Amino acid sequence: MENLILFAVLLTLGFISGTLLEKRHFKDIRQREEEMVNLPTIMLKKPLNSENIKEAKLVNGSVVISIDYFKKFVASLMNFFGGHIATYETLIDRARREAILRMKEDAGDASEIINIRIETSSISKNATQNIGAVEVLAYGTAIYR
Image (cartoon, rainbow, N blue to C red; front, side, top):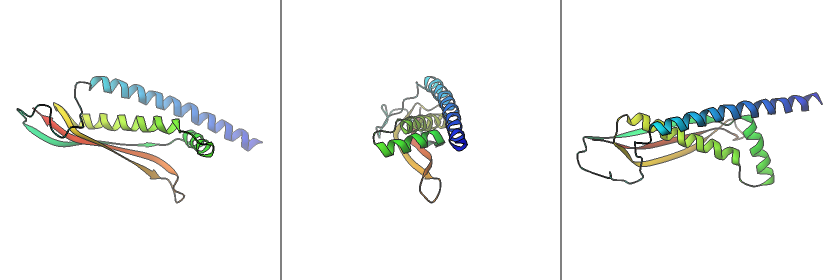
């Protein structure tokens, strides 16, 4: 019985701390997105206006976000019962947005970033191939005028 209580307490602590950290990170992401809203990022291979280009360089942003114990627990339940795993969806969304922001920060005073690509990968925690973290890499070509 004590083990069950300990498990419930740890699960609750993981849920509360994970939720608080995630909310704080989303708030930070929203604030930084508002600051960088004027730097267009597009999937086109060519700039919107190809005149007066001084420089073009590759920029990137990468982030690795760990999967907390509560998300793993909920995901294992969803794997058992089936359905979409909303806890992982927020993790991927956070990682993708953070990687794009880091790419924009790497671009500095660029006019636009073109040919944006996003790559994801999972990092296995041990030999049983449990996912320990997710990595997202965003890259593109910064255009300077």
